[in-house]
Every structure is written in C-alpha cells, then in structure tokens.
Length: 79
Image 1 (spheres, one colour):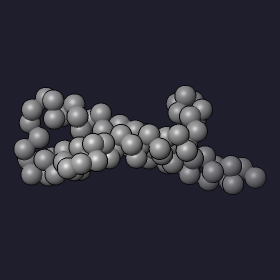
Image 2 (image 1 turned 90 degrees about the vertical axis):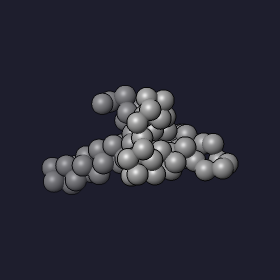
Image 3 (image 1 turned 180 degrees about the vertical axis):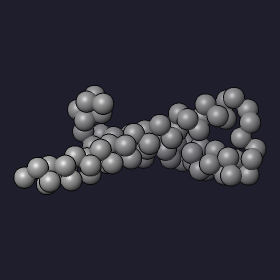
C-alpha cells in the first residue's frame, strides 16, 4: 500500500470531511446510511453504493493512521 503512504494526510482529512459530510443539508449521507444500516433498512443497491462511496475516504484515513502507528512502533523497536 505504498500508494496510500504517498497521499498527504491533510488532503485525505479534507477529502474525508467533505465526502463524509456531503450533502450538508438536511443530513449528511454517511450519517443517514449508517442509521439505515443500524435500522436494517439498507437494502437498495443505490443505498449500499452510497454508503461505500461516502465511507471510503474516512476508512482510508483510518487505515493510513493505523499503518502510521504500526510503522512508528516498528521504528522504535529497531532503534
């Protein structure tokens, strides 16, 4: 996943906020789809695609943070 390491964290956080919160009114799609998932009403393919699309960048930010944390621990052990 070296391609993920090449993307600046600032750009990823901005993209995660914009995509995760869009549209801002009346309620963010990501929040709406997560509520549908919790209620068991997330069944239409367009809704599933919407959840995946709006959650993809925040998930990548989490993966990048996790990988950075792991590599930081590995560097400290080898020193």
